[in-house]
Amino acid sequence: MRIHPVKEELHRLVDELPVHELHAAQRFLEYLRHVGSDPVLQALQNAPEDDELETPEEQAAVQEAREQLARGETLPDADVWQRLGHESTR
Image 1 (cartoon, rainbow, N blue to C red):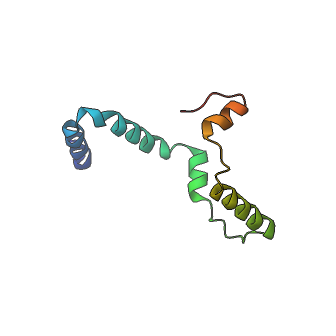
Image 2: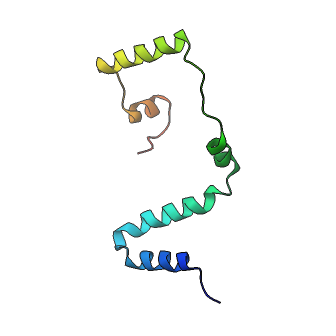
């Protein structure tokens, strides 16, 4: 039984990868394998684009956030997680 030519090429590429890239390649291939079997991911990928205009309240909130960012009034993620009583994800 002959293996599909694309799979042969993929095997060749994996064999030629530097060792330090193997983990990244594995994660990406596992992601590709699961993309088709995850109903939530499929629903998100097939969802229509949100084409509603921003409300004035949403526009004001975005402007306020940009102004806070410009003034340096931000918190690192780790601080937010700590305040919420969780460990940092990093």
